[in-house]
Amino acid sequence: MGSEIKRDIFIHVFLYSLLSYVMVGNGVESDISCLKSIKDSLEDPLNFLTSWNFDNRTEGFICKFVGVLCWHPDENKVLSISLQNMGLKGEFPQGIRNCSSLTALSFSHNNLTGPIPSDISTLIPFATSLDLSHNKFNGSIPPTLANCTYLNSLRLDHNKLSGHIPQELGQLPVIKAVSFANNYLSGSVPLFFPSSTFVDYANNEELCGGSLPPCSLDSSNDFPQSFKRGLAVGYAFSVTSVIVIYISYCAPWEQSQHGRNKHRKKAKELSTIFWSIAGRKTPTPQAPTEQELQPLQLQEKVIKEISVVTERMKSTMRFNEVRDATDCFSIDKAIGMGKIGIMYEGRLPNGWNLAIKRLFDSKQYKRQFLLEIRILGKYRHRNIVPLLGFCVEGKERILVYQFMSNGRLSKWLSPLEGEVTLKWPQRIKIAIGVARGLSWLHHICNLHIVHLNISSECILLDKNFEPRLSNFGKAKFVNPNIEDSANTMFYVSDGKKDVYDFGSLLFELITGKTLKELSCSFSTTTTTSTNLSGNSNFINAIHESLMGKGFENDVYTLIKLACKCVRPFTDERPTMLQVYDTLRDIYGEGH
Image 1 (cartoon, rainbow, N blue to C red):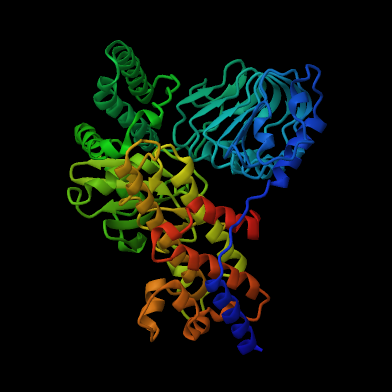
Image 2: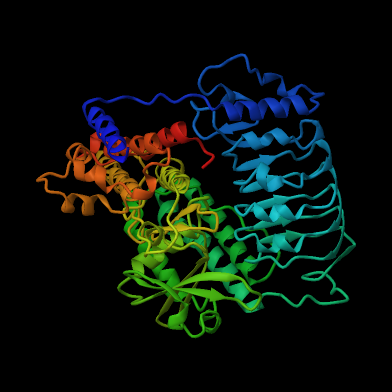
């Protein structure tokens, strides 16, 4: 039976190499259902939602709805929902779970009532911003809100919430602004890590601890203050450096009067950031938009400017505390070694685990260090490993990341005898996650970042086997909107390099070997995708755990996509957005 399955796969792959087809994107029904449920479950006395007409079924029609922003204007995939000050009534709509790619939600200044759902983290798992302020929500704040680990901003102020603030909220890894003001909350406040730029507890008279009057019993699991401050500075520095760069290089290019006004404005913002780091409760202003920067022309200047600022900085995170967290960089704490440094697992006194990278030679690998700060310190995405802070002390250069408990993907694709093997649904989940992350970097992120180092070594897996991209030391910033032919060629070429590497990763997910390893092991004089996929040795190379389990159709479908990604001519390869859309259309988002 096994030989018949392999023969069927061979036939499908061979036929595919002779044919080409175009994937036509379809509207995402779940997101349409999501918006329908919101409209149906809420009272709309002011008729703001009458424009939500679901009779029109053209591509991207929901993207024209008031308060709705899509990932792409011609695709029914909701990015954010903002329904402020509309007089809406009712309870929190459960159907919002169907907006599976939602990253921001605001119902502020309405008349919503009832409790915040206890399963809030399953309704909006990828939200970076949640604003429920100025409503009439009651009951307690659900502890599960702490599972919304991508939250940057959380506003629950001006409601009727009562009870304790869950201590778990202090563990939100990238939170920057929180407001609980004007409720009926009581008890000890959480200690946020890293330190939030802005936390507001005003008019909750029974709250205590932290910046408020002390509680009768002090908490015993606080973070060391200096470590907490260090991570806050490390995170905020990435934003600060962008503003410094803007002042130094972009403002002088603008028209004189407009440029002077911008210069003064950015200088004021820069001062505000430093004061907030020093301890004042001043909200951090937003960094200038990336469209104001011209990444291709400024790339080396960006690196040089961040380098100058970094050299002038004193310690942003105390080296001795990083050292203590790793038992003096004990070999027993080492979890990996790359080209630029050794990765350690660190543990704080309160039990928090961190991944700590100590660079070998700060001068030789300065560019990599700066790029990690520039990219990972600023951008947050569900498939990019979060950078929590960094240390600059003497010759030491150290990066601190959120710990990924399942380690590198490469370890799982080459297991030792007796070790657990990845199941097929897990492999699909990893493929979709990596494609999602690369698609976001290439097409959604304002700087349009190309990674240029994709492999199973730089894919980390969290406790749920969600993949996270890491190792951005070779990345480049490219803005394809700049009207420059050289820049366009640069972007396309580098972007398609990521596509090729992703195709190789797909082969590795299927066989346990990279495309290069497969090509070298076969007795063929060419390494084109057609010859490789049609080679009987390649069919035999499919990992034995994937055969005879009912996944054969999925396997050869993924082989087809991998073949497209590794075509020898870059203009024949799809974009990462097309790759991601293809995977999502075939396998869905549920993996």
